[in-house]
Length: 260
Image (tube, rainbow, N blue to C red):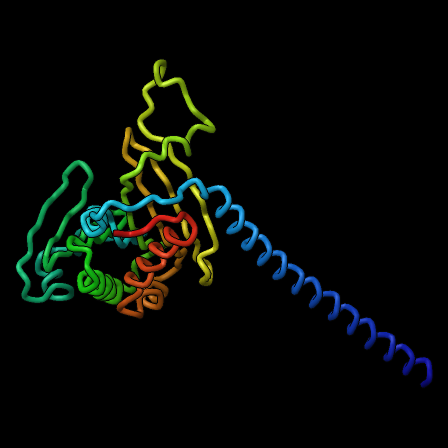
């Protein structure tokens, strides 16, 4: 009996030690992850300190409306998206404008300052005005579509913004400068991918030089496995507005860029 009791106590202590080891390793991984994120932000802030006193050109809405504000990657049945279906489930009585891109097999529906472009592999929504009311409406449109087509296989959702710069940032690209007398450089870009602060979400920030023009692209990328995942992400009508405000804050806080 004493031997069995001793074995029991030793097993209990062993399990306790293993638990402490597992818990310590878990906490260490969390601490390391937070330190990596913190060091990234500090490094990013140091690297981009050259951007002092830069401003965004006052064309925020024009730039936003020219990109795909919301993108859903998946296997879409293009034939479902008829004018009758879009009126019944998405736009109601609003007057529809329809365009077909035959080489790409996509269909575009425009109504209420929102452009919905569907192809076999993606669903793209453009906010043509780009103001807060328009950005709320575009969320409602996507919600209507994914709820009505709940069984569509999907893999990712993106919330995107683009900003143009009125300053010459050529010095930022000198680290890998090519001889432009020998080659024609179409574009150069710098990319950062950071933890988005939400489960499985990350933020891509891309600075691109096209000739003499410079642009910042923000892509909030959410991996998903079902349309119900998308509904959860866009449950708040203001989710796109929130991401827009966050992108402006990043430009101000990390890049020292002010929005006019």
